[in-house]
Length: 466
Image 1 (cartoon, rainbow, N blue to C red):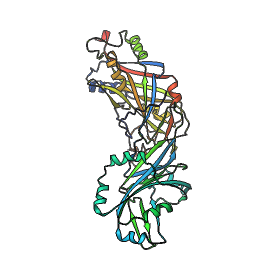
Image 2: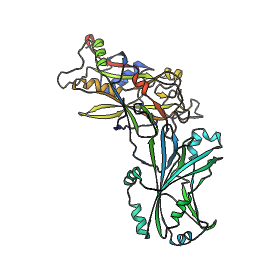
Image 3: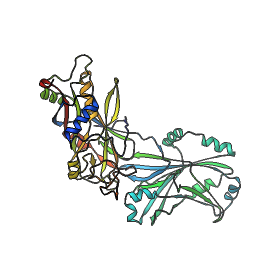
Image 4: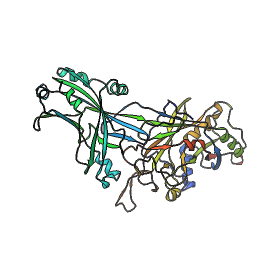
């Protein structure tokens, strides 16, 4: 099962769409659901379980297109991904640069601020100070121009064009610098003195210039989350003639370049925080055979337009193995696995994010079942929309295909709700998910080689009930 170059996207939200909980009150919830779907309330629900399901195929797709980061950026190499930041500066000051190019004390530094809100929510702020000897590789492109028209021409470059060009920097100067980084509080800037060769290049500016400054930390011990240009305080670069004669400039945009460092080409590894998906094709024959045994009817349905409306899928739950290792969680928290299915929409195949029905008794005992980096040996994902569409259209050759992505870290994995709420006494707030992306890593290789199970809840009116 090799990695594919194809990537499939779907909406990923901190809390998936929530519908009536059939596990908790089957009678009232079922009547409500059947009514919403246009089915009579006297339809009965039956269950069928199918074991030893092996995926037909599974492939990971990663979109490495750089992304614009206005409010927060990440820097470092964790969980098999290297994340680089690119700052785009544009400025002019004839008077300042006439002095800067002739001084013997010219210097420049970059100031960045850690995103304190993230570190507070992640609980990392309580473990300050943090520090390490951090090696940063700088790469830059410096263009020079004259007048405000030059600045305007740079500002007119569309973000999409700029981001696309970040993939292919060639022959740009690169300098590695080692810093001793120690963070005692989250309000202070981290000052990074820029390499001497870059300072010399800046000293050649006479009027205006555009500096694209790229930085990476390929050997970092952690991922650094910093404020972006649209946040407060934003990063800035300062060029200095003397302690009292300096010029500060701020980037007008910032980009994130993420590169996979994985070396196993046949592994099915999913990374969080990036545009990466695991596409899984599930064999449908065993499902149709199980329906034949349950109802005594022929499956798939091939009469007329082949649309099978003899039953409705109330719930479909796919269960696979799960490692209880915390390696790859990044923050030491459980991480949501989000799922979407390919469904039929007026003859076209589209993706639809699956809803999530809660089993509160199970959650109290074992936590939400759609999480990894949790105790326990099974991961359960609901694929009701996909199963419903597949059974309806199996006679027309439909396939059963789902898409998995890594979601956000969960702060309250044993809470029986799936959204932020107040405690029963109304005095405290319960936050379910981190507000920030989690740059996690989970290896699904063994799960895709091992047998899975599927359980269906089906509503129908057949035989004596008709």
